[in-house]
Length: 338
Image (cartoon, rainbow, N blue to C red; front, side, top):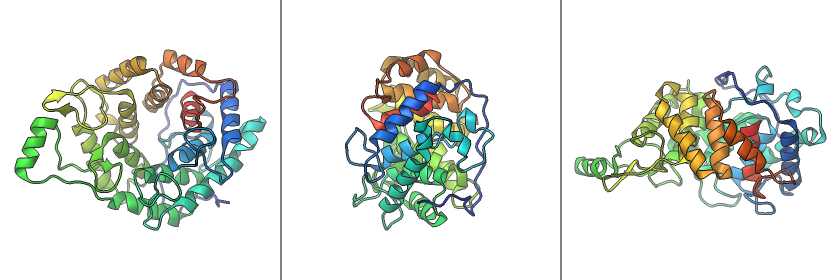
């Protein structure tokens, strides 16, 4: 079992926001029951029921069962609760009573899946560490994992190498064709690749609690500049570049949601009204479970709401309590509606 305690390295307290999302008890209990019933025997979860455990789905489900969101901002019942976990988060019903034990098993799975280099791959036996490292750090920090485990994960996030374009003529070409400053470092999906919006946002969220550390703050600042550089002309974000062959690319719901989650946590003054308007428009156009759930979480991190999107997401919940037969989608939807 993971020993729960406050790590010696002090972390920032989460921002307190006046949320307007009341807990929908039947939705929550049914979703938690779905996660408890679909947890694999090894303690993890897959993207779909019965699929092999992977880091992203396991971390997302553990965070959902812990009553927290990926940003580190607590749901309303936890606003006055001490960290890392408080008994009052588990409520009154059976689905809640088993949630802490399930989160413990998930934490054990994540710790066992950490690679020698300090990172995490997609699955436990993945030979390469990648963007999933940020997910593992987010979950294990919330669940009170041993400080040495977290220290190794943070070191991987700070040291991961990615493509750098620094020759003046190449920089000019990429600014003209792609509309970006390629000298800025974000985070890649895998080592040696270029930086992308979603892994950069995820890494910023994972590193944010340690923002006061001298080796973390400069990397956070550069990551923020990377996101601002990749912002689309009318607000919001595409998956990577705002332009291709000198033509603007459209913003999309999920990368916009991730970018806003990160900026709300580490650089809230950088959020623009057009970013939020773009997110709302793209959520309405996309309407997938992921777009609605991540969009609602991003709006929530900014203290905002979208009742239409919330009602649509709630209506998508299946009779078994899940969304899309997916523990991952269910975990994100649970937190979006919590």
